[in-house]
Image (cartoon, rainbow, N blue to C red; front, top):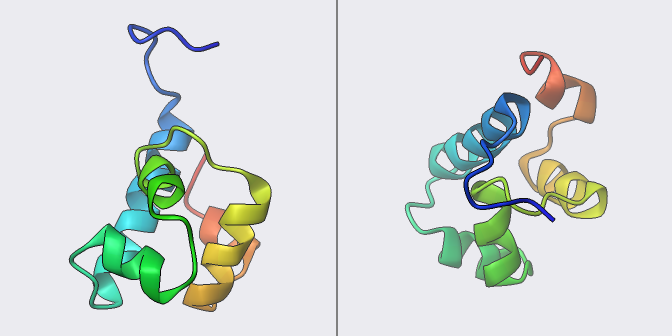
Length: 78
């Protein structure tokens, strides 16, 4: 289990930040409204944007919503 003092991996932080930017670019200022409109659990989506619990299944669902491939999404995350 991750300790609170442990620093978030920079790649995870980049992924979380990118997902947030994508949501905002889609016109959603609220993560809750985005989650509601796209049938994603609100708490789960909040965790995704904070880089706390990004599962592959959820990531792929979010990328499908944004109509972006996994390779496109990851192209600038290293």
